[in-house]
Image 1 (cartoon, rainbow, N blue to C red):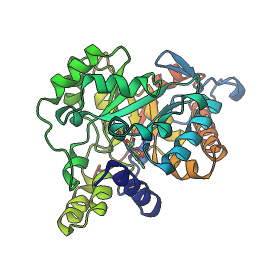
Image 2: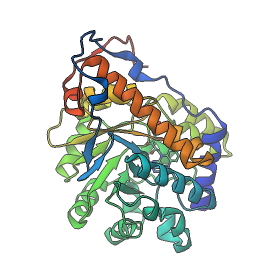
Image 3: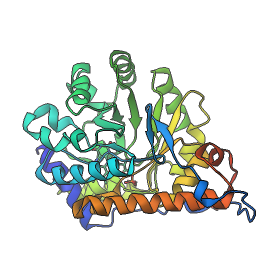
Image 4: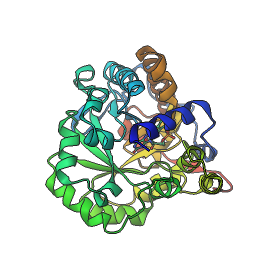
Length: 341
Ligand SMILES: Cc1cc2nc3c(=O)[nH]c(=O)nc-3n(C[C@H](O)[C@H](O)[C@H](O)COP(=O)(O)O)c2cc1C
């Protein structure tokens, strides 16, 4: 099956089925309300710096798509809105671009998003399947990106009929790639989470930014299981749909590793979730699925969702008495959940 066809299946399943199989684990955490915040709401500054660029608040739209007709519209609307609202944007896997030059136009969004941090994406496992360091450089240069996410997705690959499952010796290859690329390589999962011990290994390989992309949002084992015709794969995808590290837990564990900056991803669904993620130790937050549907409507629909998230973040900052993101990061957050199943 072609990569473009697989990407099309992903979009159709994400748009037409309920692909969030776990609860929102951020609901287990609460801030203490501050009735005397000592802050003027209008003075609250949500801005931050990501990859040396100023952005209006710590949000990155997650890697989703590229390489087919529908993707051109999606990526253009995401780019226009991200530029207007000054947030960061990551594009979907560029593997298809390495194989088919004509898929380039759906990834060429820099002309719509001149000033913001823009990131490319490739599967780290592809380093065992013919993708070279030159390909990584090409994937960055072709889209004029500020860096590139290498995704780690063993669960997603093993539930795919055509998945790439040889993850042997990927870490030294990541290390070589980091050393050979001038632009930063970041790591992400795709919804099963990253642990503290894997974070330590990635740190040794030279990685500075990790999107934990944990359990709580889009469930890729389920999506891949739904794509196949085989009953056994569908069953496998279902059984493992509750597998993974809940996102808040991954943030607090991985952020204990010094020298690593954490991006909170996987199931964040509001500006309040973004605020909680920052207080748990993340420097950036990323959201995927909720932007997909909006991106098929218009760039304005994407803009409005971004605006809503920023407002919710600002209200959370107001009610804990944080004037800026640095102060928010210092605020205490309480765990009151009973279980993480
Ligand atoms: C339609 C769609 C396509 C995706 N494609 C990719 C991809 O190409 N590469 C990748 O690293 N992650 C991909 N993801 C995973 C997201 O980047 C993100 O890690 C995951 O969906 C969890 O975040 P969410 O719950 O906010 O969507 C995709 C997600 C969606 C919804």
